[in-house]
Image (tube, rainbow over all chains, first blue to last red; front, side):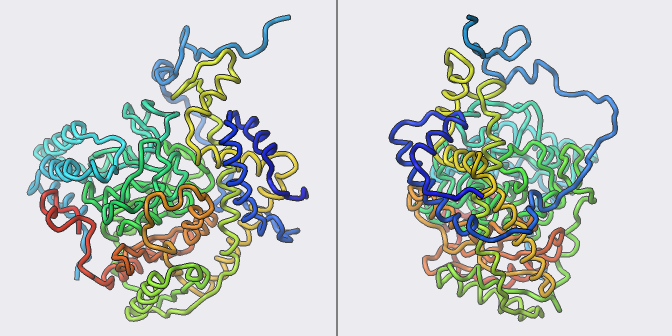
Length: 102
Length: 495
């Protein structure tokens, strides 16, 4: 088990990158302090000895939920595309995904 | 004595033709016009659509049809429930202007029962908050005192019912977001058993915890709305395979012989005036024939920490979908990753960013087991704690919130203090159990106190029977959310 440590500004910058969030210097300072406080409160959980206790991801778990394999009408393409910020040729339009070809 | 049920009375009158739905709706729209500017319960009021819908119901009644159990009853719907062709924003800039292409199942069920949706209610952004102050459209104010918060995240729904803007409302409860605002606004709020009400069309926050439920001015009305929205939905893979609940019919069965456990851990951090009200609630249950005992459930102390790891972890995954590609806001940038980042940075508010980062951290390499894994094991401990309590008790009692409504701005800069206002409501969500908040008098400041009743999975009927007893016994200190001079100017929706 990793040792929970005091959250640093670098940790928050790293997590923001993973979450696709661009934070200003002021936001980084603010969030680092606030998130560290919350994680310190969570130290009571992190430090418990719960070896052998099974995790619960869903309190009312149901399994193998399948519907009958019958064709049904779905939402129309145009209806779904209507909410998109940019559309071209009946598709979602996005900016360049990969870098320029070498 | 018959329990008061103003919403059910409207439906009865509209179905019998003795009252027109359009008059009912006009009455509530007048109440909204009178006071919405100062309360800001709604992101959107659907005045025209509501009148058309009411007209349609009146025509159907005139033609001999029965529009259903909620015929002509105005309902306010939280703005994280999808409404086809009607903006659904989650009070976030990132979804501003987005119109869902389908209705949530609960919205369909409202329509099928003849209800009239009068508006989409304000909320904390993506339901993340306990005061409705994280909304991108500005805070909702508590109708009892405009300097106080209504609670959250379903603060707009609670305030709408308290202010007499609608006799019923729908909210969602992930860590207390129905019960906490219900308590702070002096109305009834029920968080149903996980899986009894469809989540299809509820914009996801933390999928293993989210549950849709009713707000009402009375227990009997909350029961009617729960009966309408509940029941299996094949469109929600976590929906339980159970028939539609029928709690309405059991409300007057009383609680003779029931065992009620007053949870010590919930009273520990509560203000003295709130604790005094809960003690009086316990006495009222005893006077009605229940056996009341104090009980300790130590694992409750761990729930808040576990919740603030589990819910953000699930949120960080659920909110990854807001990438500027398929719906909502896009901030242009030269490549897609930069566009995703610019969009999310501009579209999400501070609290949503905090939760996403907290969850991303709890799930990240090196910390997954220490935080998220541990929190899931604590969740098991909490389920065990409840199971032990329910071997001795039929229901548990405590305050819904440790304090009455706090002032706007009091906790916005201190996330942990804000999170602590949910300390009594969170354990229920982790367990997937039902719980209800019932108004039980006021605190020293004259603001409402909510008594919370908790029960085992699928025991909504038992809970609401006890809630009905509390409602009948609640001290009447002559206070009301609507200034006396305004009562009667609307539809008489306020008690």
